[in-house]
Length: 303
Ligand code: KPL
Image (tube, rainbow, N blue to C red; front, top):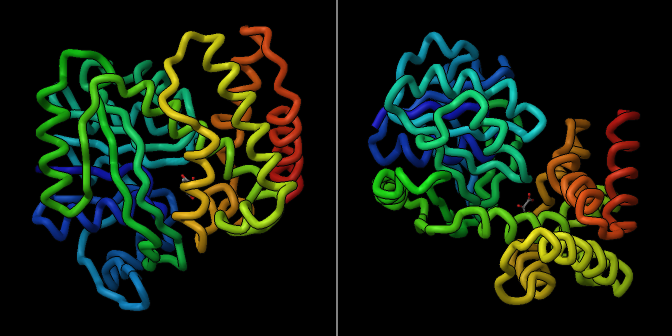
């Protein structure tokens, strides 16, 4: 399968490398010339459990160097989805698929303005990766990837995609209702990302203090109230799930934590900000999410 990874940060590079190792024809596309040059010169170095391996795959800053692909995977930060959408549409041409595994809500809707919705597959991944330096990433933890067709017409192609990912060791499952999966991941990001970004703590340390646990609980409970008001079905106890994931990814910095550490634009608007906007139309109060959003927006506004 010919694949373009649009956005070759830690996660895009990781998925690209795993797919390339499994024999797929993968090109990384990124705006960071240092990373692109390092990958082309020395390969992509992946550190996992203190061992390093190098994966050879091409990288470019120019989509025209890639040509039509069977699959364009969008892994840019949510603030850059609009800019990536036309590139994804051009690369996927008239028959390729576009997959988004980005954090936050609203990415698929933005892609669907440029890409035929019947060729969009959305999903989430519980893999963790950290960008160490240009050309080098750390695979911090493995977890399940869950995908589903955005419209009902491409379910068979979602299954073929899952087979390709599973062959590459990316454990992947297909679901019918991918929107419920995106909401479930949103609850997790709401409960972990902004709090860890603002306090500088690792995911697991969120559980150490009653204050941070309570803040996380209140942020997620507000999001649950908004979801209920919007008629979204909720599976299990999202607060308990947040605590489980915080423990399971304990030594990691959340992606928003890493963004703040490196003075990068965060995904706050697509996570806590999304809930605040939804709450306005649903008439649900969200003071905790509003405060977390305002603080992260202020922080990133003063880098
Ligand atoms: O998705 C994540 C993120 O950091 O964005 C979690 C699940 C919180 C893991 O760090």
